[in-house]
Image 1 (cartoon, rainbow, N blue to C red):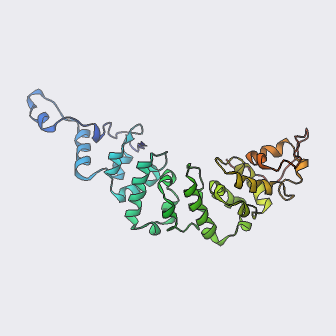
Image 2 (cartoon, rainbow, N blue to C red):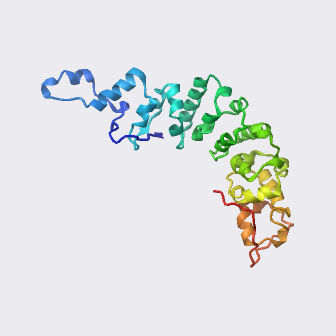
Length: 279
């Protein structure tokens, strides 16, 4: 369920879906001095006349949850206008799919959706199909940063994203990736082939090692590629000299360092320069 974000203290405390009274029967009982709350009338009008608008959604109390039927009453232009708020929290797939299809409809095709919209999709990302990615161009680092977050995408979705990044991203080859590039690509790195990962410069890997070592659900092929980078002299130096602090920096990657390499847990910590702790 989408959680509504309140922008005014006087926003309505009722939802159109909760109105169950028959207005005709209420109006017939005027001798009982029953008054229909203004907010109920307002929300009944919203639901029957024109659907929920972005402004009305923003005025709902923060504790209210937007149902799929409420969401489906919104027009595409209102969905796009409220996209930042709608996609901020984790979404059920059905709601994410409705939002994504509304965006496509509003811009008349995936290829016409501007970067500033793609960059704020957040949890709507789970609804994007591999076919949709084939119609995108992912050259903007802010857009890639959105898709690089962990939305628990399936293998096909991540693979399609990896293809787009490798083909589109600022005309860069893996050898050119900086710490900032790796930080933006992030979870998509898990869909890169080992041979592609091993082309990344060891010093860039070193700077991003803390983030890479915390990646979730990264396959063995990708992590083995990072392990190859980790043992390079331009990363953390000879593995036999690694101390406990280096193992903490490389995180999960340490599990994929070839066993024949003697990685020690030495009592002395090796000072490592150039690492950045990006959560």
